[in-house]
Image (cartoon, rainbow, N blue to C red; front, side):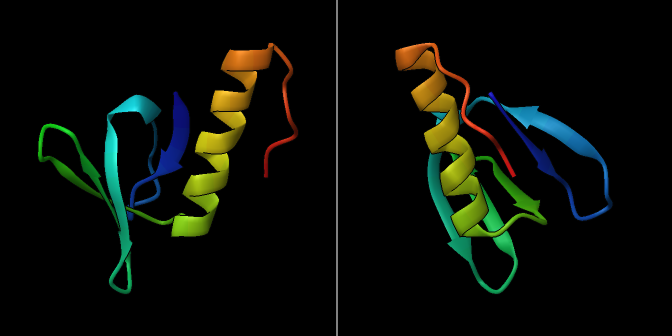
Length: 67
């Protein structure tokens, strides 16, 4: 699970395993495997790093520093 911020400033947690596509057009849009699209404040690069950190934590048990 990763924490992201909606455009209105509210934070929420999303299941990183459900992310299918991340686009910047110019705002960042996350498309989930069920087709739902969510616009967030974080950049594509930031989301990629959040997912990498989450996956690293799951597979190794080590917690990496997050932004």
